Amino acid sequence: MALEGEMVLKWEREQARLRESVKEEDTEDWQRSPDFSGLERVGGVDLSFIKDNDINACAHLVVLTYPHMKLLYEDCKMVTLNVPYVAGFLGFREAPPLLQALEKLKNEQPNLMPQVLFVDGNGLFHYREFGLACHLGVLSDLPCVGVAKNLLHVEGVLRSEEHHSQINALQKSGDSFHLATASGRVLGSPQFSKQHQTCVCFCGSSNQSGYSSQTYTHLLPVQSA
Image (cartoon, rainbow, N blue to C red; front, side, top):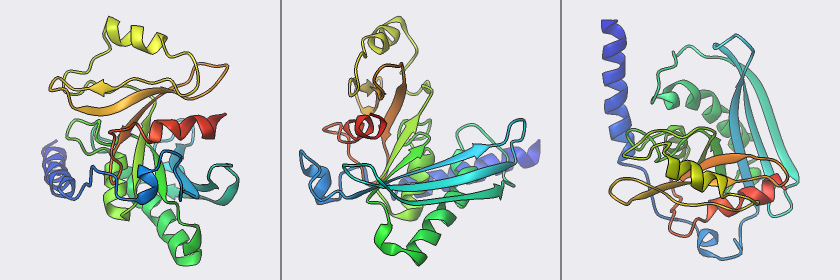
């Protein structure tokens, strides 16, 4: 128990150190273009676990063309995770195999590296504003966007009646609203991402991805149509 507490304190310090390297503003010209002119490749990463097994997983990386969303590259590798799951510290567990997949692509086919990476996890919308998407973005030096399936209770953001009412008002692909903290800072946005079925994702900015114009929430409907 003491060892786990010591590990968590170490991780907290490391998150704080890496958090200083997060670039919250847009860094690429295409990010500032209303039609994403110049964006040609988008990527996505995820770790999928075997049922009833939280150690063996499949690390998956895909790269698609934009805006047509045609498959350019796919890599899937079984990995063994040696780091335990601790809420709020997913980056220490899942980032290493995902970084290995990105490094493999960079070494073998650098011309196919994604210009933006969607990550199955939170970004700034996190207890210490450093979720998996931020962790991966800082270490890979790629613009990353966190896409989560569940709402974290962070800085006054709760599953209140008002929140449920706003979620229910999302009716079509592209509908969204801001998730603002108690201080008024916008860290993410619930996004209705599929037509003809309810699929609400919580999208948030992370590294090299500003949120002033909800840039990335409008990429998701194109991928999911």
